[in-house]
Each structure stands twice: as structure tokens, then as C-alpha cells.
Length: 244
Image 1 (spheres, rainbow, N blue to C red):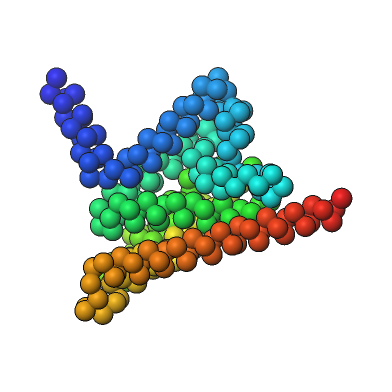
Image 2 (tube, rainbow, N blue to C red; image 1 turned 90 degrees about the vertical axis):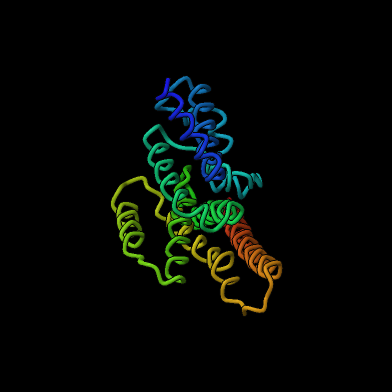
């Protein structure tokens, strides 16, 4: 009985202290269970209709304007190992980042990094079916590195983690290097907007003004990512028309 209470307390504490991380993990797990049930296979969940409707395939985005795939694909995974590895990394990063920068900023970083990874895929892997939270996770790693450097903290640990993960991206077949690097770059830039910039403002600037500046800068990043996605889709559509 005491063991069950301890476990329940740990889960409750996790949801209370890192709610965004907890709910993102829950959402990813729920989506995976839904696709596995629909496909009637734990290993081949990508055969489900839900997976096919939400994973990222750039030509469909360009031709059918199914823009939701840029974000929904970050909640889909190819098989249980893909899911568990990404959720483990999200858990580790969430523990280290969410409370230090705030829940809203953490969610903002995660979502725009996911979009950044998908937009990179639109440029680099136009004929590949892509899914996974890796772009968002790389964005969180990039954000962690930027914030740590701005505070002059030790970045050896996150630097080593980035080097190892980027190395894996290059060496392992089937891994979307574009999604990883795109998420990394956008996450780093978004961290400058949301976290570093407001701390660099003069001391006389009030908290409310800092919030306005940081979120305005973040929206600029979102708009730029959106414009990049539009440009990639337009270029792809023009190429498809030309080939016809």
C-alpha cells in the first residue's frame, strides 16, 4: 500500500511541477495507443488511418494545404522504441528546463521547435513520410544551451548531448537530419526571444514590458517559420506543376 501511495505521489508531483512536460508525454502516449489500436499492431502503428492523416508528407501539405501535419506529425511515432526514446528525452529535458523558464515559455519553445523541424523537412526530405517529436526535442536542447550560455553556466553536458545526438542523426539510416537541425536552430532562436532578450533589457524596464517584448519577439520567430513553410510549399507546388 505504501509503495502505491509513493508512486501516485511521484506522478502527482510530476504533473504539478512540470505540467507541460507531463501533458505532452501523455498526449504522445495517447496518440500512439490510438494508432496502435486502429492498426491492431503495436509495432506497425503507422498503418493506421490516424497516422496517415497526421504524419508529415510534404507533397500533401503543398498540394492539399494540410498544414496541420507540420504540428501533428510531432505527436506521431514509428513504433514503440521511437516513442520511448523521444519521451525519455522529453522527460529529462522537461525536468531541467520547464520550471526554470516557466510553463508557457516551455510550451512555446516546444511547439515552435516542432514546427521548425517540420519546415526543415519540407526543404530537405520532400518525398519522405516523417513523424516524431525529435525536432521539438532538439529545439529544447538548443534552447537549453542558449540559456545556459547566456547565464554563463557550464554547457559541457548539454554540448556533449547535442554532439552525440547530431552524430546519431548523421550515422543512423532513416533518421531525419533536417528535422533535427531545423528544430535545433528554431529552438535556439526562440530561446533568445523568450528568455535571453527580456533579461538583457535595462533594469528600469518593468516585468510587464519584458513579457510584451519577449512574446512579441517570439511571434516574430513564429511568423518567420510560417513564411518559410509557405515558401517551401509554393516552391514544391511550382515544381510539381512544371513536371506535369
